Image 1: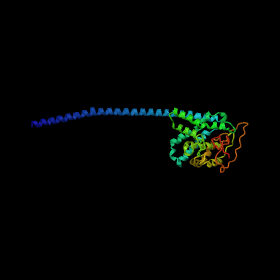
Image 2: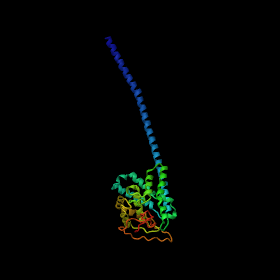
Image 3: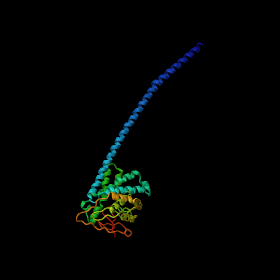
Image 4: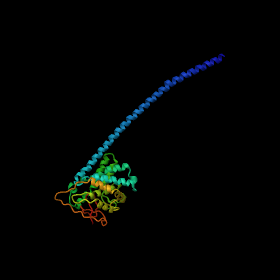
Length: 321
């Protein structure tokens, strides 16, 4: 009996000690550990919030810096525009034309997969820089009311490669922003022709960057529709006929099809952002003859009258060879 009682007492004592130990372990160790974990979790959340706010601030600063860089580069493009007395709203119109062409090609064309939203944004952002190389062309050549000589026209053609060099150096200094890479493509290649007879490199077909193929058509349409000191503006219908006739010659066939799908929007923008008529005293405009697009095989040069040179922006307009 005594042994049994002692065993019961030891068993009771053990249970009491166990309960006391469990109590102290849970309340002192576990709860204290949980308090540490809770504190650590709160610190982590606070750090996350701080880092996230810093990230947002840096992102905002980076975007503002990029906007500043873009504005600075765009100012250079407008500086080139102001040096050319006849450009007017050309940069704004052609950027909208390029955006419309990109939208049409995104909806239905073999190029659809290339026209992602970020690409279109960069494309439209870069479009006004296509003639930035004109900053290096003398104003006497840019604004000459009569035909350019062969030497003057060769000088004028140099604006493509000059613009590409300017943008290449800018991109190297500013960390290779995507829109500057596209702008460089456009600047150097927007006077190339689908048939390989353009300049400066004589690229043909899909050798020409897609961005430059869009700008080529946008640039030509705007030149046709603009009244310049040496020519009257062509109406929309005649401009459409000329561009349609150049499908597969001067222009990418799919880009022409995209243009034909939205040509009414081109006309609307051309009218809404039309420039005031430009005239230079004592410098009569050259008559612009009516053009039979069915007979014309390419878009030659009125101002320079170079040999079989296609319509280049405002410097070359349509006439029969």
